[in-house]
Length: 115
Ligand SMILES: [Zn+2]
Image 1 (spheres, rainbow, N blue to C red):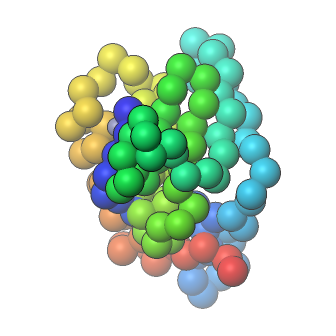
Image 2: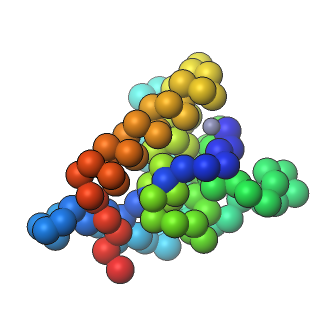
């Protein structure tokens, strides 16, 4: 499902330099059922998902809008990955989970993207 507000990726935890860089290449993973997903930093199709879409998860692809703030890219990533693993969950449950995780990582732990 698409989301329209949020916050992540490529993180750096200050002051230590733990983290990873935002990568423009594809990331591939399998969910717990063994279904494969490809993740790309690409703006979701505006005709299908509207102008304000931060991310989208289909049955085998995740698109994360790279033209958003670091916090929004973090949130959208957690949100869309959660959909890939937990399709049975309702939108508000996924949003609550992603918002909580991204708030913990970004606001509380101060994780930041490495430029
Ligand atoms: Zn969603």
